[in-house]
Figure 1 (tube, rainbow over the protein chains, first blue to last red):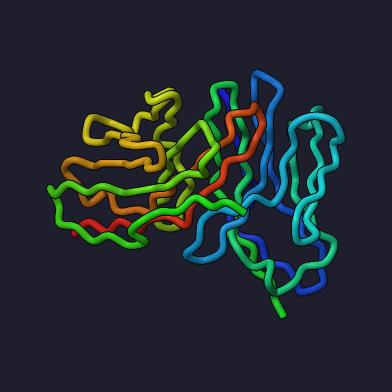
Figure 2: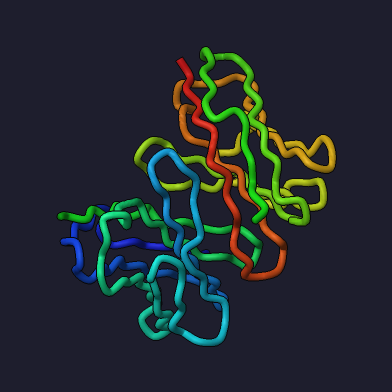
Length: 112
Length: 114
């Protein structure tokens, strides 16, 4: 069965600092991996996705993630945090049955 | 860009009452989903729907829940007899059906059961 683990339910970074949000997955089949962002009182917005091909994936708002099969990881990074990045971030894995499993989320706080 | 729309944005109901949450998925999508998020917690899969039938459901999706696509555009989630623990944000999502294509989410319906 597929699963997703997000380490750190809360992450705080200073404005301008590196953002690193961790995601590890478990999948018995080649995974499709996604990062979504949720702003307060809103739905989930796709940041980026990995399906096949290049393992470094670039998304919106300057975010990127690298698929590392050997580490079963798909960590999300951004070189320089902005105040507007404060939100909840969810990692998700797509399964062979079209069901998408979400992690527990990481709330990112950006300090001025 | 096409959007998934959900109505109402907020629904308050009394315990034991029936509620219907409505969604209009993206028109050319084939797969439809309901997820829920209890306040401050993870996004939980409820059910997926394809070709006018449930393709998969979670253990949360018991006999009190049902889904329907009554016409070519709407996708509904019905809770027959609401419980306090059904209070959550309910998200509808749709997907194009191509393996690996992302889900597109609506802004959710906040259900409050009193």
